[in-house]
Image (cartoon, rainbow, N blue to C red):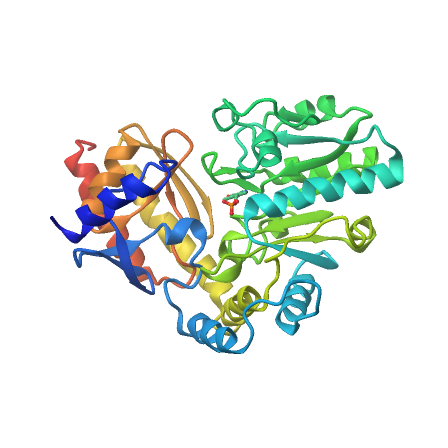
Length: 400
Ligand SMILES: *Cc1c(COP(=O)(O)O)cnc(C)c1O
């Protein structure tokens, strides 16, 4: 039996069956490359689902984790720790928000945002202002409140009763949103690009209109930047393409460069709604996670990673558009920076499998979209290699 079969069989026996997994086991990574248990090498354009912003095992992140692990890993929030304070300061300086709360995942960040929005509204507008409006096809995570905010029934089915106070509207439809606002509404929660939902990009007209509605009706704007944040789109935050300021921002995925950490940021007047005892997370903002995140942020700045995202993202988009000209099976390409979706008429699962067999890891978004979310420090050479594999696979699948 191969090492891979051994791992998979034990996994099927002992690990809960919640994921449709690829039949490979990854054992090592370096930059944009990963190796499986059989020694096969892959170009990783999934990056742990938009997590490994600097690729696998970036030396700056590895060193920071090593150093901090030897010094102080965890101490709880009963005490201050400097890495947490430094990370909060960095996030505040680089966004429109004034305060940070740390947690461990995107869902947990969104839970915090939902609680903060409700608390703020209760304190400022009364007990019946609690409702949150989010978009259809959105994705906000897997806790009960987060699946309820998520505008896709398939994530909610079987888990009822769901928490009250959530409503969904069609994305990019300002009129639908305006009509959904009621005296009970306290916040609007949106992604600037619906990532899991299919790489649906918010128009400037829409997000700016949403911000105006928030001001008019005294609502908080929560931007879920869990996937679009931390440089993915070529700016530090996805909302920064829109000339708007959200009141609350949620982060996770790429924040720790591969180390698990989430954050919820808020404007000062909103953040004060949380007082000691209102919200907490035992692991949240521990020195180890924050050291990993700080090293990731510092490297992104020092190595001009945002500029790289813009440059390589444009190059990638151009290459994919050329493929789009060549294959009738490609129907649309959407993206910004290094989050790109390619709609195909052929079976998405089959494209992914064939790409994997040819040495390229990609993931899907929505129903028929291939999603490309590589490390943010990749080169045009990596893009050439990935596009060559996709080209070959689409030819095999009879796409001309
Ligand atoms: C991945 C994701 C989440 C959930 O993050 P977890 O860390 O898996 O809980 C929430 N919102 C968006 C936009 C995401 O992409």
